[in-house]
Length: 212
Image 1: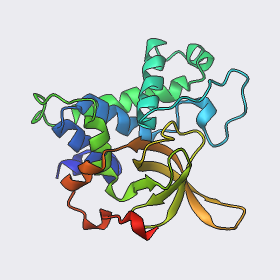
Image 2 (image 1 turned 90 degrees about the vertical axis):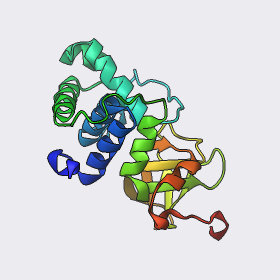
Image 3 (image 1 turned 60 degrees about the vertical axis):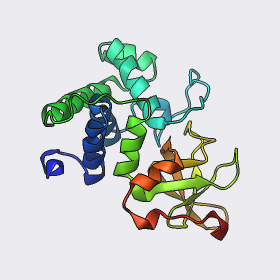
């Protein structure tokens, strides 16, 4: 019922509600707003033009955390178009994210406002919103992934989640390989602990790695 009051895709609405339950309300609202908007990072968009100032790729546990960092940098610049552009961030888009995030926060009940989250709360909430997007990496250090439904996928070169064994593929686009085989190209992902899957009630998530 709470999901109906949030102007979001059902996946994101479920993620926000779970984030609030886990004590990560602000992070959940911000993540939902970011995932509803085009990538703030100008050099990470589909149609990005190579730029001499592109930062060296980093490695991490969550592309969503990277987006949050970009948003906070834009906020530090007061969402100034020129100042954000120097940081290769879309200032107007970041300002829209800020407005949407605040709107979502106001629309949530205060039931769990006393809850205190931890560093894993947002990742757990993302899993709750995208339970059918769980994937595992075939081999350490390689891009090949297997989705929980058995379909193949690959980590995008732009994703910082390049070594996680288990992850949630939040944003993926289909691409055709040279073999004419279509696979999902995972642009935005989040590392998860496979033990978290035990808290979900979706039996379709059961993955036997010996089958692949």
